[in-house]
Image 1 (spheres, one colour):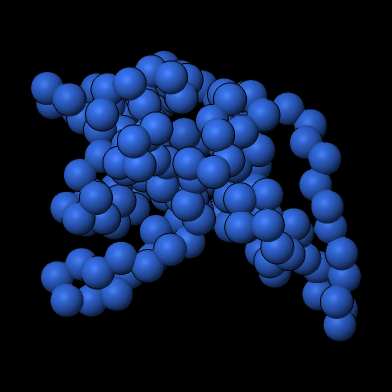
Image 2 (cartoon, helix red, strand yellow; image 1 turned 180 degrees about the vertical axis):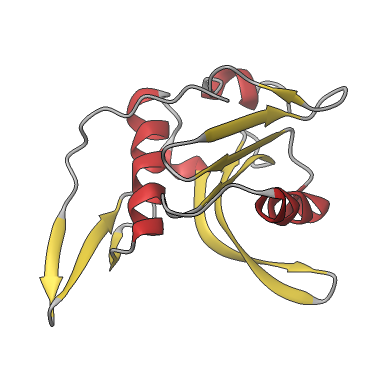
Length: 150
């Protein structure tokens, strides 16, 4: 398993019509706070604040076409030259990271062709490098490392 230690981040929360919303630092807007969104926001803050990934090189919940079907990825990190280099699949903490989740992120990679995949439910993290086979990483690599490999 990949080690990820979240710091205490300053989240902006607000209530609207009895529902809680959280400010998404990548999309720059408030989004409905679900348990999966809670994980996604921790991952975004971790990448930007702790691993120094540039916020403008991160795309969140965007659509891609896969075998004629529209799918939506959670997070994709782009290199300095705008090539996708990492896909991150976020699940709610209560969800099990099983074979189906890994098949989901692998299917996204058929289209995006990245060198790094990260599957997380906030508690368990599996970050893999795909060059010369699949290698589970001990830590999420810094942005400079993944961006320079593209």
